[in-house]
Length: 87
Image (cartoon, rainbow, N blue to C red; front, side, top):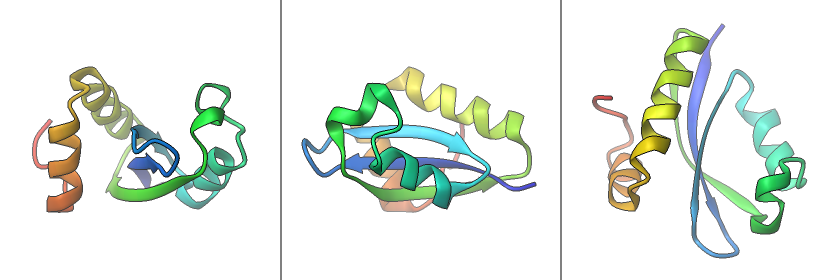
């Protein structure tokens, strides 16, 4: 099963959100429907980036690493480059 790491941008305040999922389309719909309580106040979201990973564990590891960095410049570089180069 293919898994994704994705980056969303809030159209409300411009902040970024990083997540991972095996169903990117469904997850984006859930986020924009306000089904994630901690993000409900930031809807709507726009998908800015996604990258496929072969395993759920790898996608989750990359997601956690990116969240740990919490660096807007790194996130914007990933979006610009279109790939997560090394984590």
